[in-house]
Length: 84
Image 1 (cartoon, helix red, strand yellow):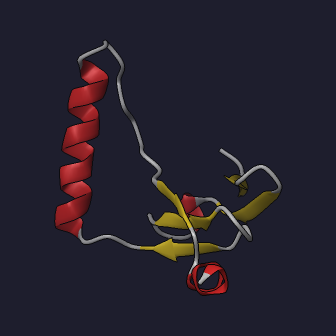
Image 2 (cartoon, one colour):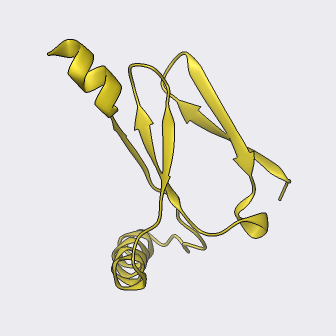
């Protein structure tokens, strides 16, 4: 439980941010081309659905899920348009 957490953004990039205890719960869109990271917040309804699905998957193998973090990997708008 530190103040700063490291988020891996591809093989060449790292992103650092304040721990969720100091900010709010959120997820990340991570560009695998340039390493850009965008924070996203999901609705409470979607978060509850994700929690239920992850808890069910974890408990099916005897694992107790305490928290989740979601990183969506892909290409940002800049890198997507650069490939066109």
